[in-house]
Amino acid sequence: MARATARHILVSSEEKCNELKTAIEGGADFAELAKQHSSCPSSRDGGNLGSFGPGQMVKEFDTVVFSAPVNEVQGPVKTQFGYHLLEVTSRQD
Image (cartoon, rainbow, N blue to C red):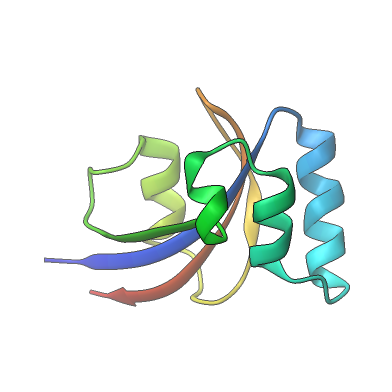
């Protein structure tokens, strides 16, 4: 069964999400930005969500996590919780 590890940053606006993505693309540290800006409890661990399989996260999340390139920041991804930047850190298909 497929498994992935990922980290994310959760914010309330698409604008903030894009701002953080630009900062990361410019060399800012993903984990530090997660600690400073993410409203998810995972923020204290740099946005790390650990390992999970298909169907364990919301559908929008799953779609990206199990199709996007590894180690490339994706987003904004809109879910019922807000806007996410997602980075798949590993995946086994």
